[in-house]
Image 1 (cartoon, rainbow, N blue to C red):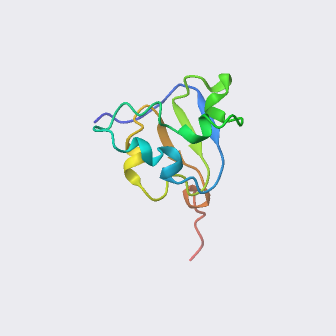
Image 2: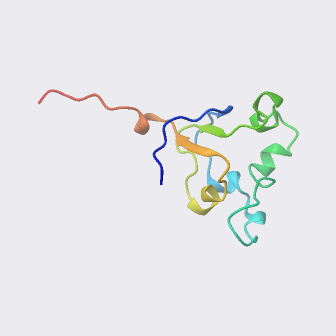
Image 3: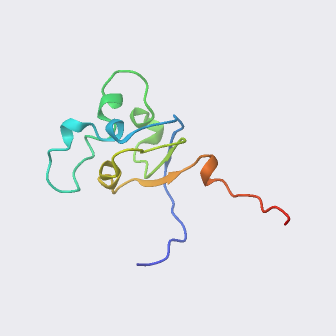
Length: 103
């Protein structure tokens, strides 16, 4: 595997806390075989509810990075691994650099 140095792309912000994997890939899509082809399932309920949603916003069309809020993607790790087109990085208190204390 090659080292990751730089990525250029559109970033979609999704700062909501506690987004679980059932919201990312709803259960009705988990009967599919394989780990690809889930683009239409990604946040399906939120995308089709009619309410404003970041991935329906034309400014984020083609986003390749999704920045989630605290506790993003908890519960079912298989749903996250089913979204290979989006790079995932958790931003929250536990991901912030820790200050080193003096001994």
